[in-house]
View 1 (cartoon, rainbow, N blue to C red):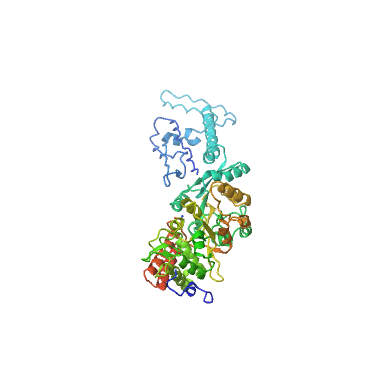
View 2: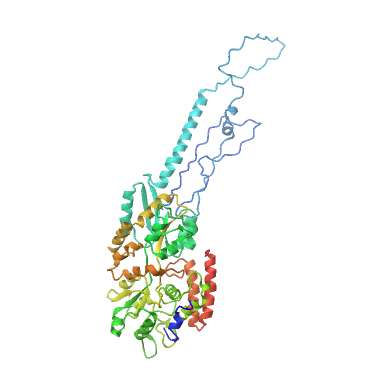
Length: 556
């Protein structure tokens, strides 16, 4: 990057400026077999109690109580019943062969009056006695009933009384009525499959998802952020070729999704939408100041200073741009990632580009330092300031549009691509996709539904349903649908930057309390230290060390 312009060279002044849980199989406590005798023979010790044949070999976890198990108590069987488990135990003398020829007559011995009288021989028993036949029939009936229980009744409880395969799908952003518009069509095409969709709360979603997958009660299909693959790679099943081939994936989706979701030739998730960091501009403030929308960082510096209004004490009344601090800037991690990427820093290995990292941090923090600052830590959060009309330029994603409009329906603003350094047109992508759990018992059906979700018609139908409840739907993930949004001045800027977008582990509003949160903590510390007069080089060194530790923790 020595031949590439860096932020520090463009700004020499220091004054620059968001299952059906598996049913528990029925267990029963069968009645004990009636003892064949009241007491066992004195020479045979009582047998150990045997477990009930209905007791499951493995404890089955109950949904709604992760980690809890059912452990039915084994039913004891009497010693006499145990002894009767084989034919040999029921016979006290050898059986007579009914097909042998009659024995020759024998001389009858007549004992004398002084001889002892021998006891009479035991009566012969027949192998085909009524008692034996009844026991055989009862055993056959028991085997048949057990077969029905295993192959008919239990699967029916798991898949519903109708026998359909039930696929649980966890989403985050769309309500069930909206999703049902596309789910109903899939179920009509696949009458043997039912989709059980539920919208989850983003708060603690990552923890819930991790725990439920580990204990086998998670969803078959679930939503993940594009930066989460290091955390979920071992719990995601590689996408089958029947769902989408690698060639189709490369052709239909943007390059950033290929880097995020494809590892070692295997596809682990598919994008459900695309979103990129863009620039919101207050049209009224720019027009009043006679300033054009800046497209490069040098023009941006000039415009942000001219748009900033301070009172006599130097306190900022209207800010030209929300840059320079960390805690009161919405999407600060993503914005700093933008500066790092355009300045040539390696976002997956900051240690390989330390100079680019320190220069980007210095440039970013300069917007909140010294007399030429255009933002500071005393101001409201940037999205609130913009909605109130007190901020001229705000950096955000497509979903911020709804929050701004809800706060101030009359605010006039536009959305444009972010400024660039010469020859550097990157922005940051932040989007969500879907994957199939490696523990799903219905992966074939889950991948079939995933294939349906990423079809062109399905994305268009879902976008139309979403647009009936708000200003626009989620920007299309498919490349071949981008031009259909060209006439939409609100949505198209986010889609138009997707071909050159890159991703970052410094990502806001994922609420993961893990990889993203840890990375953002080190980034925030770096910015604060520079504002407190630590050198950018020292701040960059501390950031690089912390980031390396986090990525090592997650196998990067």
